[in-house]
Image (cartoon, rainbow, N blue to C red; front, side):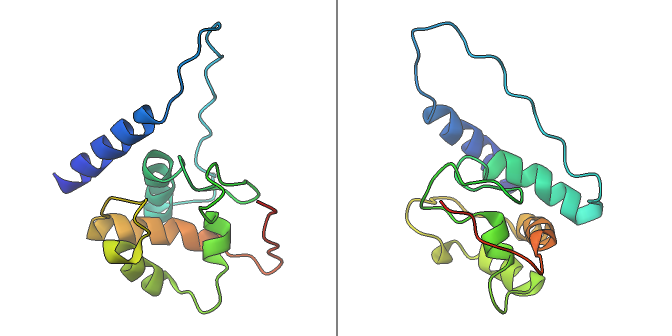
Length: 130
């Protein structure tokens, strides 16, 4: 139930951020499928990150975050000393988030998000210019 509430909240939050245009409708953006190399929890984490996080964070390597104040998932994954376990724990504690991120991540969601984010770790990572 908590997961459904979180997804519904994210959907309503993202809808509230949409601008109104008086011109012709823009073509629908293509939904990018999860990278094919992902399996299990990492694949579920990618899908969840599209629903909950992509409004502010760049969730794929090489992207720039829509919100310049939000680090990319690749930047997070390549933080010194970060492990899947420490990231999962961080994600589950909403007191760690800035006030602008006013939502909680369920325990199982923290695990799958961490499983995905950690796949973005790279030996030759260079942070994007935001």
